[in-house]
Image 1: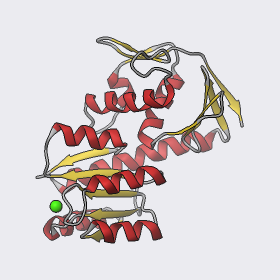
Image 2: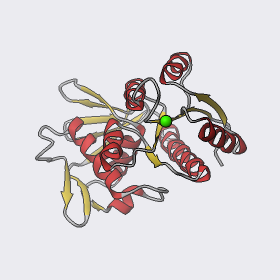
Image 3: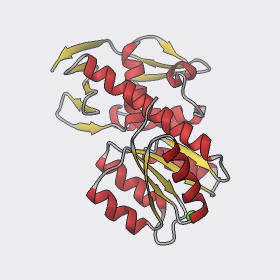
Image 4: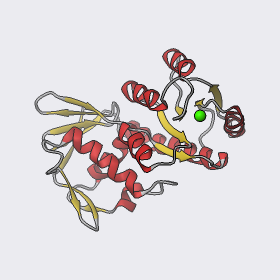
Amino acid sequence: MTTGRLIYVVEDESDICTLVCGELERYGHHARAFRTGAQAMYALRQQLPDVCIIDLGLPDMDGLTLVRHLMEVGETGVIILSGRDSATDKVLGLELGADDYVSKPFDPRELVARINSFLRRRKKISALTTAVPARRALFGDWSFDPATLTATHRNGRREMLSAAEAELLLGLLQSPRQILSREQLMQARQGAFDRCIDVRMSRIRKKLEQDPRNPQLIRTVYGAGYMLMADVQWQAV
Ligand code: CA
């Protein structure tokens, strides 16, 4: 059970805010509500929460601006909440690196379940990195350090991955040269949909592949899944 995390709820509809914060507190989390993007931005500069729930339709700014800001600072989990139930918004949010997307109307219990599932997955990643401290994976022209979520190219170029992208990459790094199905890559993830994996994979490719349209490092095996086309060596930092 993951409890006692700091969660920001950025949502201008007070009914939804009250419901979500109440449900979060019921699970032992510490929730703080913000009615405008400006208030949230101010608070984010003071202290970063473990997870930030962001409504896309804010009175003073597009919620995606906040998502972009959080992706630059890293670390915080981002869950998008929106009445704009269009596939474009969903994909755009995930492309920016958001960890999950919930459409209104929604069941606050489902939202909290997704947050808890995100926190469990994050804990798994950090357990993985602290159980075997200071190890990085060498593959192709890259090394990946799970502790800092940073991939470094042979030529010195560095790319930061989101927690969700790192989780996916670690899945591939643990089983190189094997076809992994989307189900295997999603593992027991609640509420995830196939498109999530594809969007994240394309973000990883944009960062790691020389030509993302003709990927050589991570191949798509049609109808089966993905395969990492490199040997992996784990090395002490
Ligand atoms: Ca709104």
